[in-house]
Length: 247
Image 1 (cartoon, rainbow, N blue to C red):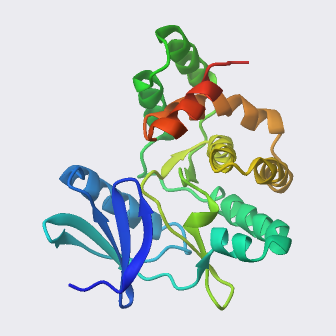
Image 2 (image 1 turned 120 degrees about the vertical axis):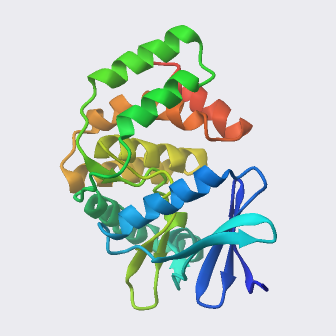
Image 3 (image 1 turned 90 degrees about the vertical axis):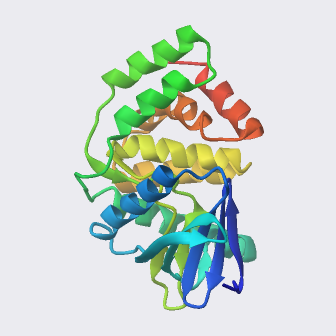
């Protein structure tokens, strides 16, 4: 199989364009159960969220596991923001509107956010006292069963020429508390060094979702600890530093 070009590289995954398909290939460390779990997660989301490319097949390419999807044509919001900085505010508002729309939906078959977050917090590299403090704080947090993307950032939102949005990257999707998902998006902006966008996003999300900012802030340390187990060293250190203070 000859791929047209590389679309994206994320951790142990490389996404290629193959005609009208996007083919996500996994490195040799990609375990079969993780690949099929990701595919299943995507299929569940397809039935609940309209702005999702259809999964076509799961297979092996040159000895590596791969998932093929319909190709979402267009540019990511990250690309559009970079190309037209003067329009960044408008794109950020569109980005937030899309996330708020997702947070209105439910999918009871998805894994539960609080369970996965709790497991990750206890696996993090924080000291034992901080881990258990955060875990106990998590137990007190609300747990609505709304769809949470788990990796919602501008590079995962594609805008077509007709202006329609397509959301990709659903491997970490869960059912849970939207404020926690918003806290993660805020952290992703900070990890990318865009502190201004992080602040603007947080204000927009609170305004559009009618959420008290403190409800999101209370999740930040917990979400940072959970996400730290999935990141490489530099990002992990930053996340752990944001996990060490519990209000």
